[in-house]
Length: 49
Image (tube, rainbow, N blue to C red):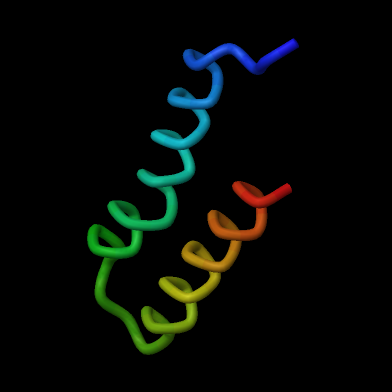
């Protein structure tokens, strides 16, 4: 039994947005780099899970 393609595409797109798009639209601030790193690491680890 294989996995359906639609859920894989949906979750890949969702975590792609979280890890790639959201870090660029964060507001400027003193800890922006840390927030970007947290979003990218969260997306990567949740996608792998």
